[in-house]
Image 1 (spheres, one colour):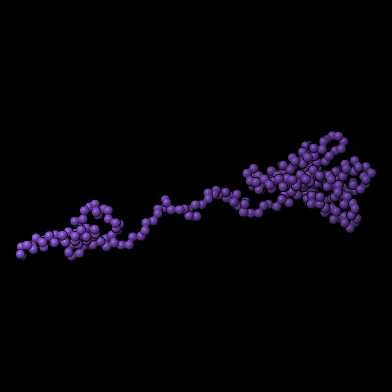
Image 2 (cartoon, helix red, strand yellow; image 1 turned 30 degrees about the horizontal axis):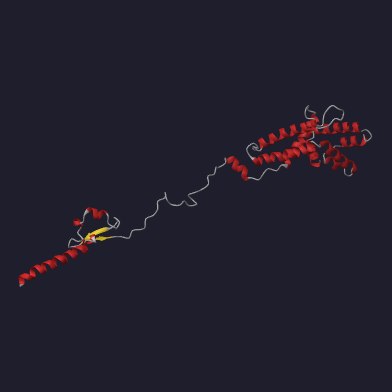
Length: 262
């Protein structure tokens, strides 16, 4: 009877051992490392950052550390505001220095240009006539041409002196146009403006204001020529022109005072 139970018990033990082995086969961490197939080691779920230890009985136990989630590389990260910056060109140092300052005042060079035109007119330089001769010897456009020639020459010299470049800078071009327009507006109407100045001086001419009239850029000789030739307009114009030209050749302060009074 005892012999009959031996096959039954043996089969029970075999089935029990097979079930235990089957349950342990799902967790390779309980199997000694030397007995784990290499393909299972490569395809484990845990990352390779796990460490391991071996118990006193030879059983392999992994000690896994917390692994931070994977991060995207810089290649696939979205660019930030600091990564993407507009492409700008740095202007030359002299251009930066010029732009940091306020625009130049156009009033002084405008006065200087007109005063210089009075000096050129007094010299009677050919091609720069600023007085119209009503004797058929010239055309009205010659006054405009002479005024444009003087204006252009002075504007170019002033731009070079101020280190301005109207060909490349719109702001410099605007400055040149404004200043040239002011000069041209005075030179093309110079005789008309001077006549109005003389009329105002005659109305207020007396001993008390004689010095003040001279400070306006009107010499005493010119004022006398205007008053004494009232009945002869042609002679008046010629005598007045000769009187003011004689003074403008040598009296620079008077030229500037005359321009301010026009």
